[in-house]
Length: 135
Image (cartoon, rainbow, N blue to C red; front, side, top):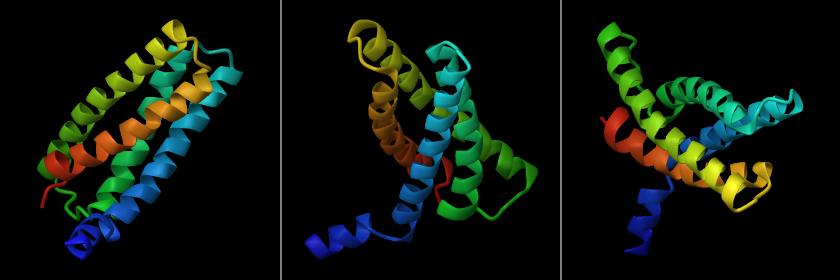
């Protein structure tokens, strides 16, 4: 039973998602920090970082994680629409968490961003697996 669960959880897809999820998080975090260095308000920085991370994530998820090979217009439009919709949901969580953590809990924005990204990566994998790149 443990062997079956292990092989279901640890496979090429989940490992590659984890790798590209980490890279997406790095894109998100670096852009967020650069926005901070440019004195951009942390919520605007969160939005900019989110948008660039979504573009990076769609391309890497399509090509390397879920290996969606079709570039037909209707396939890409369907995938991209679903992808962006799901990322808006997780982005709203990220945005809301950042506002709550920084404004109400007085958490350091950089630490709050790292905590938020853990939950966002998990939610995005579930969305991608079940709704976007389903086989």
